[in-house]
Image (cartoon, rainbow, N blue to C red):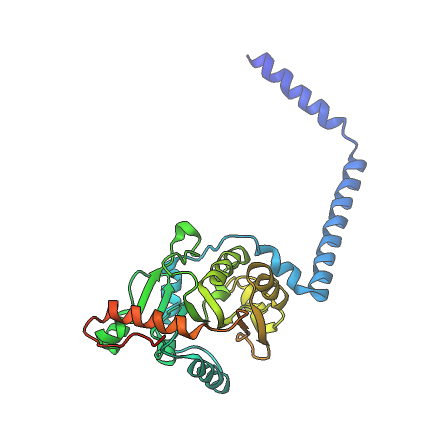
Length: 293
């Protein structure tokens, strides 16, 4: 046994002695040179197009958990938006709301936007928790809360399940501080479903992460936002929906949004019947006449 070990030891020593140290030093210098050039190339790429490096997570799945979103929600009592832009957004919501339509609110959060969407006859809300937050139960009367239908996004479906929301029924889609955390593959699934939910003539406004904006890009690099940019969001809309883009706002850091409309006109007679059937089922004590033919 000892002789066998001794022979193996001698073989190793012989092999080491046979190595040309000059060639080894040359290989080491070559590797060091390649490493320096690699670092230089990465630095140049950052200077030319920093978005390329940030985009490496585009195809990854969303690693954030429902608990992460809940903690993040509790740090924001109100949307972090400059006052003038917040005023513009609330005006847009107020102009769109009507009791002849339903609304889809992607990202209920702490319910801040509910006040500005309250005139819709029905509001579908989705988020990462199963129930409407307790603060909303305290704020609103049960009669009003009956107008809200809340759906919890399911991790088993990549947080993209909108099955509870009927197709061809939503008149308006609104989302703020919610979709920037979703990856492009997740957004593809959401947009495809949004296209089915929105009625002809329906409109929407969504907030998106925009790597073309320096502040957004920093949040993307930190892993807070998922990667997106103006080109990607427009391609998603063109590829996954038949929406027409009406406006893109990219002037405000961390507040890029896009407004869109589904082609066609709202069938208001159909909406009258939708509202009549909804109220007679949801509020049987309410006396309402059927629409006139």
